[in-house]
Length: 284
Image (cartoon, rainbow, N blue to C red; front, side, top):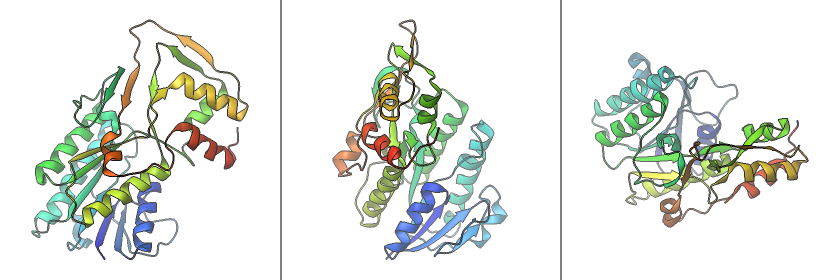
């Protein structure tokens, strides 16, 4: 069994850590704040932004999962974790001549395309925000440290506790209909599944490509998704926003590289995931 360091044990990172522990791996988790509940594996309260805080972290790990959550969407929060924090963690292992495998979670927000284009791992990363630019720079830093390190870019995450679209539908928000504005999603449980899938590949010694785009099989117009949600939940019928032809349409994310590797989605499309959410009892 492997020794695995999980840097960031929030909702998704914590679930991955628990799953790895249950499989018999030796897991150590890092959090900025003390955990609210006890874990069956060591959980260290570490601020990766401060070099002196890293002294309590061992070096002998086979794999590092870097899945941090900035405190806000401001560029400063992203810089603190994805630049300062990541550089500190990379230096921590370099100083001890340790070379664990790395898997870092990034975001599809690194793509600034907004006219409905299809994007994949080979598409240019041209982010529109300073926060997303921090992610691009973090990816480059990770690959500069070792080109065999791997990045997974999640699209919009939904599921329990992540019900932004449901709340918009419940409020009867006006939704862009023409031209279509596309939404790219991945269920929280598939985020966990993808990470476990890639970790197993890395630990098995499989040669992975530097980057994988993790998003479900059905990038769809937001109008279509919201209209379907309204029907399923009995929400008001969305009000259509029809804009000029040059209005932003977002992009469409292609997951072919990940599915070709063998990952099978638990929730391949929004109709699967939001039906599951309905069973969980969404309250207006």
